[in-house]
Length: 267
Image (cartoon, rainbow, N blue to C red; front, side):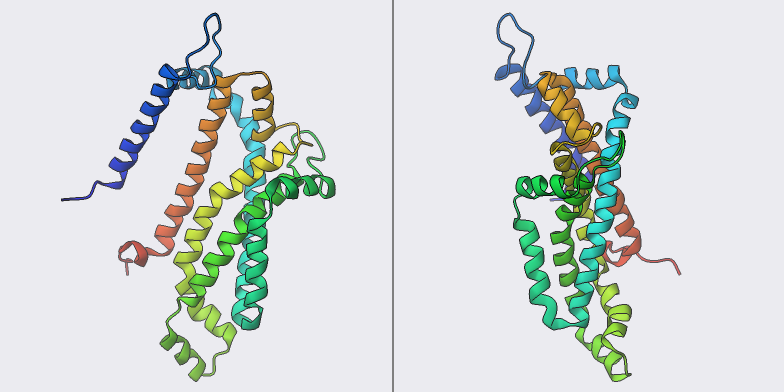
C-alpha cells in the first residue's frame, strides 16, 4: 500500500483539526443563554475576524516579536555551536558543556524570566525589542542546538578522520574538513526545531512585561478584554509564523544537504 504524500497528510490533518475545533465550539463551548461570549469561538468567526481586521492590523504586533525571536535565535544558536565546537577541540570539556545545556533546559522559564526582567529589563522605548524576550528566545534554542551539533559532529566517518590525521591535520582541520560536513544535517535539523522554540521564548519574555507592543502583551490585553475571537486570531497567526519559519529553514536544509533527501547535485 502506497504511503500518502506529505502534502495530502498535511491537508487531512488540517481539515481534521478544524473539524474538531468546530465540533467543540458548537457542542461543548456554546455561549451561555443571554450572552455571546465563548472561550472557543467557531473557526468561521475567527477567520472572519482576521479578514475584517486585515493582516496589516496585526503586523506591528508581530514585527516586534519576530525581531526578538530572530535576535535570540542568532545569539542562542551561535553560542551553542561555538560550545559544541569547543568540545571537539577539547574533548574533556564535553561533560561541563553538556551539563550547562541540560541545566539551561531544566530551568523554570517563569523564574528565569522574572530574574531577566529585573537584570536586563524590557524595551527601552516604545516599539523597541525586549531584552528579556531576546534572552528567553536564545535560552529556548540553546539545548537542542548543542545536543544536535554534538551528535552531528560525532557522526563523522572515523576512517576519514584518520586520513586527515595521518596527513598531519589537526583537530581543527578535522572539524573544518570533515566534521562540519558530516554534522550539517543534524545541525540544520536542530536549527529548524529552534525556529518555533525561539518564537515561543520571545512571546514568554513579553509576558513578563516592560514592553508596549508584541504578541505576548497583546494576548494579555485581549484576554483581559475577553475578546476570544482575536485571542484565537493571534494564536492562529502565531502558529502560521512559526510554521513558515520552520518551513523556510527546512527548505534551506534541503538545498544545503541534498544527499539527505536523496536528491542529486547538478555537476
